[in-house]
Length: 167
Image 1 (spheres, rainbow, N blue to C red):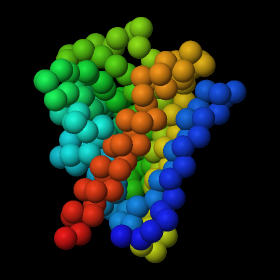
Image 2: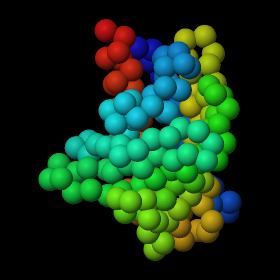
Image 3: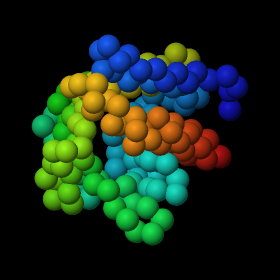
Image 4: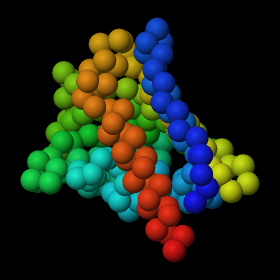
């Protein structure tokens, strides 16, 4: 594992945006699969002791990923991603929602637009994640729910998973 890989997390409150950049010592093709395949996502998405459990995944423009974050006591919090744009192995975008187990949106919880891009340079692949919120309140509510800590923990789990795959 290469030392000093980039990790940046920043918030632009004027534009209601969260930006995250993270480097991995892994090929772009593998990282693309980790972000777009339910088998991979269920192994790293979310902070331990929670784990993701996919109910359905249709990774195509107009498709969606419906999943639950499952707690250690079996508690489930449902979410979905509705994919709007996909450029294979370059980027994809989706609208993120909290919902019930049937995918019905929970309107009182924040929604956001995600854009994830991938860039490979030699043995390092950089992932850039941009989340756009409709207003400051939605951004602050998301941060208040522990987004930074949870997302960072998930990205660290992805790094561990990639290391284990090399062995």
